[in-house]
View (cartoon, helix red, strand yellow):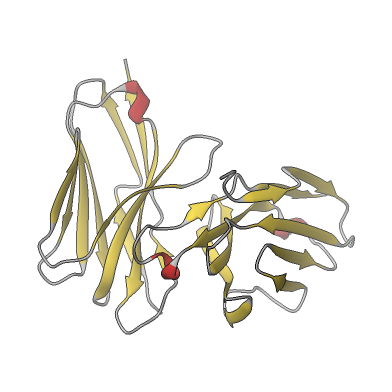
Length: 115
Length: 112
């Protein structure tokens, strides 16, 4: 298995632009998580899905952030409009049975820079 | 809100010295997991502890879960330069939730 695949690896965009981050989870995993990592705030859980259904989005910073999972093999995280404070590394992770047996498998992340 | 606290924030050791990082939760955890993130990389799952008082070993790494299931530790014996990275503990709340709450991590630097 190729693991969790995220794209793009790097994204530089101007303030106000729309940004879409993509994630392909491991086949067969029923949970998908979006995390954001910064030096100041560490790893923050933004939202997670179970069987493509959003379960908890309490970590989504504000209405500018939205996430979808149209099917079991694809998820997107969208920021519109983007702001410089959104600059961070965004990780997607997937797991089987909520990670309570074999942990989470993280993708390589998308480093987002908003200028 | 639920927090998982981790100390120390940074640790610098000479190669061959031991290293320990500690994790504390304000509430009881269903389980505790440990991850390692190399510089520029992504978190990689190391191990999960579930039972009260559980101890697990992976070569030079020893993981413990407290009796009250509120704290945990990771101890590395005789560190090597390959141990460099940030070690995160992450807990799942008791009560059926499936989201991991990550500690802030301990960044380990190993000087040869």
